[in-house]
Length: 207
Image (cartoon, rainbow, N blue to C red; front, top):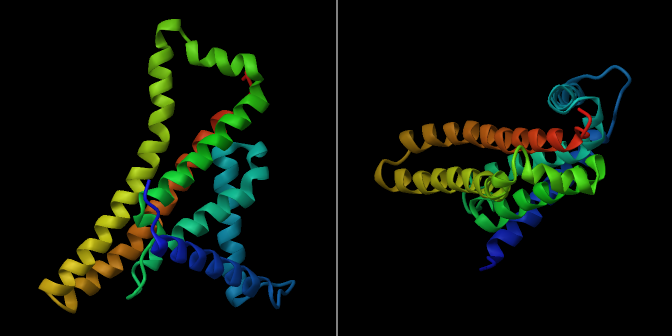
């Protein structure tokens, strides 16, 4: 596996942007929200609603993780749209690392919720012959999760460069605006899939 220093620098920059943004969002809070505080609270409430709808009441405990994951992906996806910067998510190391982190949490939570024996048994259900299929399915989750995000972000950044060379100004600007939208969608897809995996792990073996 190859590590790119640019990816590490951009990852640290992404984290710094999120931390600074969080500090600014907490400053000057008022009982009756307005302006920036009102926008932040609306976003948080919407995310909490989505988390509860997808994961159930038990899912609220993972709200900080889900929100941090979404913000990290969103800022990462947008960072490459700034001239001179690259997106951490255009590196398969980043997206695969995030996907593996989610899947480790999912399986750890599944063992904690269901118990070790039911957890192992689910690999052999509804029949022992399904064991290879279940294993392949579990291995495919981090691969598809990471490659979908990596491919879309990398392709978008390459197209911006190519269009900027071939047809300057108007077309690259339009594609840049579209890439902002794509960055939001890709962050949402990754986050929603992560939530659905966690939701399955939260269901105990009696459900």
